[in-house]
Length: 382
Ligand code: SF4
Image 1 (cartoon, rainbow, N blue to C red):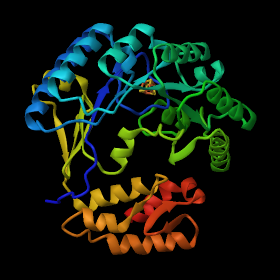
Image 2 (image 1 turned 90 degrees about the vertical axis):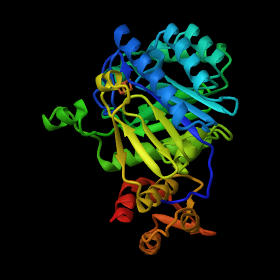
Image 3 (image 1 turned 45 degrees about the vertical axis):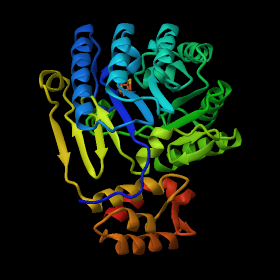
Image 4 (image 1 turned 120 degrees about the horizontal axis):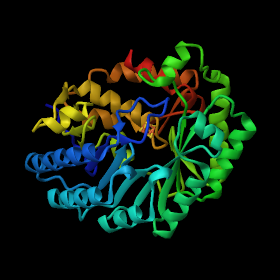
């Protein structure tokens, strides 16, 4: 059993599996929203909360992240009951950041007011694009006008800490349109922007479209150019790229995700949610019917493998601006991680070709490294 000597504040993650449709690029677990589904899911979450409270009584989350799916689809009544259950299950007085993900089409002033009452203090809005044609092509069910209304409502409800998600590398969106997208996002004055390249995930509708010749992703060169434009424009506006896909104004980095990337502990609730506690990792089955039907959600336990955890910490750490040190891995994971010597040699080789850099014992991806981050991970895993 490994002993983690590095402590990071614990987190709580809740996966809301409902959506009002399926975006063709999305491979996340989600199901169509129905009031009956919501009621069953809520019962199961309350049962899971009660059980976890017994299993992990000392959990005092510092961060809560409610993601999905589309959490803003849940009814006001469901939010009320969910809030009661969360407050009853765990001591929430240490929570410094409580994020809820929302989609523009379902974010209402009433919902925002309820979240404020629960203690939510951060909103992540799935804007994705600032062009109705592009939104339609992405299979999104909202409009640019709804993004603007949602942002106005977030401000009117008194939320200062909020961010937007954008999808880069959409075929047909040339350099000028992409730059205009970034400018439109910046004009709304968010504190945080996530930029994800449109990728073809296995299991997503887009994979079938590509196989049928109806979808062709942008070339690698064009993708890199779009992502470089994002880094430049957001950087000029004062946003730091604190993780490969995440930009924030100073002090507005997502603490929950930072703690996860640093290898902290978190409890994941809901179908498809992953958890990590003291070296053990498990994932609830991605099946809402099973989740609702079973008194205990079916869980897939991952092997408690020190090597795997240390490697995850290394790969995720490299992707952050703060980087990661091998001596931290050495001290943190016991028994000693045998891969350390090999990882060090691989990093030294990668440094020679300019994709990683070491300073004061801390390793990070370089600009070129961020462009080939998946390749760096493959080298380290090899
Ligand atoms: S991208 Fe978001 S809104 Fe679209 S199907 Fe996936 S989880 Fe739902």
